[in-house]
Image 1 (cartoon, rainbow, N blue to C red):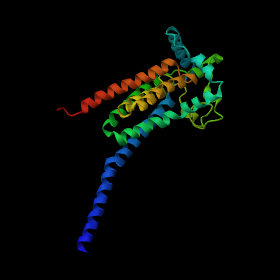
Image 2 (image 1 turned 30 degrees about the vertical axis):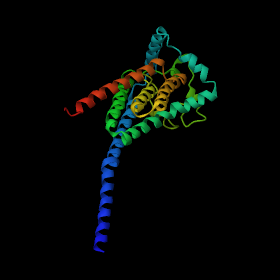
Image 3 (image 1 turned 120 degrees about the vertical axis):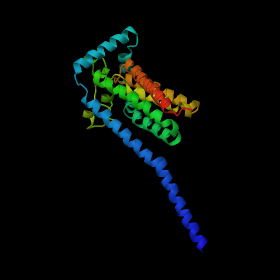
Image 4 (image 1 turned 135 degrees about the vertical axis):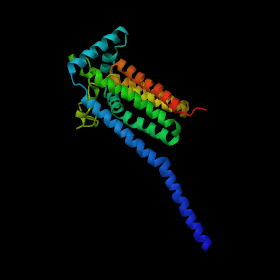
Length: 262
């Protein structure tokens, strides 16, 4: 009887130790990461709100950008935008893509790395944070109007034309009632595109051919969507990929310095 009681006590203690270990190894760090990323998102939202709302100046910068694109023969925005927006079977899925996927896929990949590949999580998190921070600096210092806010009716606002079927407002991709929180002049760079590049990079070592193909198609598809819906210029998409690439490089150097020397 005494041996049985002692055995039960040992099992309970082992269970408590396992639960404590799980808390210290996964749950507690996970909560810290959630708090950190929530704070970064809050900073992101605040930065977009406090940026300049001088539409005339932002349109002038956009016109300069479009002129550069015309010299490079990249100015396909108007043609693509007018080709897809009147076709609801294309415009509606694109609007849902633009308004939702970056909110779902990016956090899902962060969670996947944290749970399954903890050793690579910190570098991946640092990469997206650094790249996004560069984007925020651009939004504050160089506000640029997206195609949909240019005068003359040369571009259509796809999300506005499909707002009756989605949760987004006729103002931005944010839900109705939250449109005032968005900085509509945050076109350059496109972090929508940048984050998809990060997703492809973060998953590349951990998925097979199908996963890699899907991640590349996700990035390319997002680049098409942000341009076709009138939300970004082609060079915005290029710049989004560049700032995240910088984040990846810098995070790699930080990780290398943090590694103990042999």
